[in-house]
Amino acid sequence: EIVMTQSPALLSVSPGERATLSCRASQSVGSNLAWYQQKPGQAPRLLIYGASTRATGIPVRFSGSGSDTEFTLTISSLQSEDFAIYYCQQYIIWPPYTFGQGTKLEIK
Amino acid sequence: EEQLVESGGGLVKPGGSLRLSCEASGFRFIMFSMNWIRQAPGKGLEWVSSITSTSTYIHYADSVKGRFTISRDNAKNTVYLQMNSLRVEDTGVYYCVRDAVGIPPPLWFGPWGQGTPVTVSS
Image (cartoon, each protein chain N blue to C red):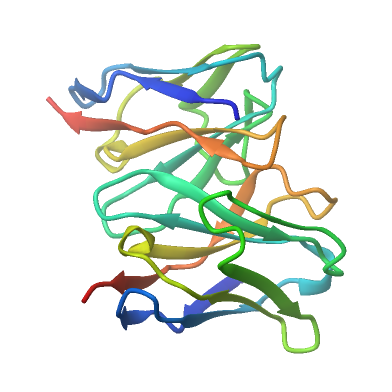
């Protein structure tokens, strides 16, 4: 099973600033990585797949990068609606599909 | 609009059973693999089970293998999760999730239902 580790667990950033979230895989996943956003009381929604491709309707301020074992989700200029929990997920070796434990992005 | 609506959650005693249902609309259900993903209170996401469009391939997490059964009825646009021998650690919100792409196997996930809560407690 591939273990996904996200850092930091909690990130405090001011609106309008850039946020950088990290995800590390215990072995190479190539570009087979997705990112999800979950707001309180809501289901997660897909942001990024293929490590860097934005899903339909996702604003351009969200960008994904990385490959193999190191990945980054960058939000270029934080809006109030971006404060949420973010999860990464690998889909190269399954079952099981595995998620990181999440990064909570809070307002500074 | 693509929509997934779960039902069937509730409070059950350890060792009991529940059957979750998820009715899909707004897309060609038969074209997509379907999944159940759960979230324990205050915790992260855990994939539970997947079923391909014609039920040819079915997979389970080790934590539920032998206790949970996924199935689907393409005529009713519905996927099910039969949960037996429930444990306290099965408590959480269960999300019905569609495969994003429609070409098997499922890879990344979206859209998601709103979730149905399951509480296993004596």
